[in-house]
Amino acid sequence: MTVAVVLFTSDLRLHDHPPLRAALQRADEVVPLFVRDTAIHATGFDAPNRAAFLADCLSDLDASLRERGGHLVIRSGPVVRQVRAVAAECRATEVHMAAGVTHYAHRREEQLRDGLRRQDVELHVHDTVGTAVAPGAVTPSGSDHYAVFTPYFRRWSQEPLRDICPAPRTIRVPDTVRGEPLPARDETPDVSPGLPVGGETQGRDRLSRWLRDDLPGYEDQHDDLAGDATSRLSPYLHFGALSPVELVHRAVRTHRGPGREAFVRQLCWRDFHHQVLAARPDASVQDYRTRHDQWRSADEAAEDIAAWRDGRTGYPVIDAAMRQLRHEGWMHNRARLLAASFLTKTLYVDWRIGAGHFLDLLVDGDIVNNQLNWQWVAGTGTDTRPHRVLNPTVQGKRFDPQGQYVRRWVPELRDVKDGRVHEPWRLPGQERPDDYPAPLIDLGDGLARFKQARGRN
Image (cartoon, rainbow, N blue to C red; front, side, top):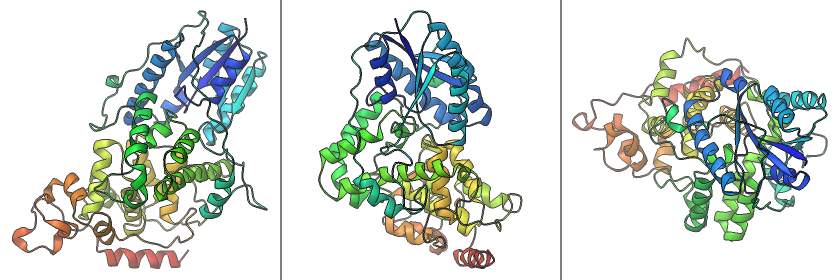
């Protein structure tokens, strides 16, 4: 009787799971294993919103496995030690897992390969589990990765995708391995009250409804802040409850038109960032392309940073975005761009401070997309126009023209009519809300400081 272990990481699903499929093809029994890694806990990356969503994903994965005769084995501790222990307990000859691109993922893979080799267990690492196209599968002449999105998108679009792996019908798990109880969402304190429910079942249901109802209009509506027409699938992609390969295939099958193209382009952005970080892992903490050392210090900007975090900047669309983040553990993509631009280019604060706050709250927060999107906005990353500054008032009027998004999240302004809500400081005295702050900084002053500082770099 041959046994293989499947180490689940950021791939918490049964549909389209190449490591699981390979293990089932090569072994008589399979141990589906998830390790609550103490190294991740020590970094604080398992912030409350992600911990709660993870608990949902694990519970759903276990339920799906039980429907097929198996179950999920949960262990806690150093991941290498736990995987080696489980492999020894069930006498496994192979371990299968998905590839990653971060420093942590690379170290984990190296340590696992070395440790398992010492007990004659082979490690198989599978690509295109967390991306549609594997990092490094397409490269430009003379470089190991694309530094600009558009040429990457052209090549990416020509790359044939692998077929979707069907979910297994049955899974046999050896009875020699014991696990711990599943974590529960209600065990996690300080969870955002509007946090969505996690898990593959929820993700697949949301995907099917969104493809049917919203994909055709996505091109025209995805930047509409009040309309909220984005897919909201990013948390499920982050935890691997949905497969990006399957998303591309299903979007292409479902609809022909600009909505499909716009959505697939967004999926390509995820792959683009993965191939950047795979080639330049230091970009998670260091400026990727344009080095910038003139940021205001955290001490100097402490009051401004606190106002930004609390949604009290006096710029309504920024404050709405930051309050949505705190309430839902999620933020509309256009709002993310505006909030990041305001912090880095108007308040002139280091992008790492903003990225850290987002990681504290975002349920979809991951090192790859969070850090590299922040760098793109800050002008230190892959943006070919690093000096662009997004004016929050202009952007608010453009993408929330009636002010519905602002009034949804900033109740102090709920009585201000129409687009005037974006400039409450211009209202007559008797109409100006007493409990809403004046602008933290004049936009002209912020822009002048940004240009002056960038001129020194």
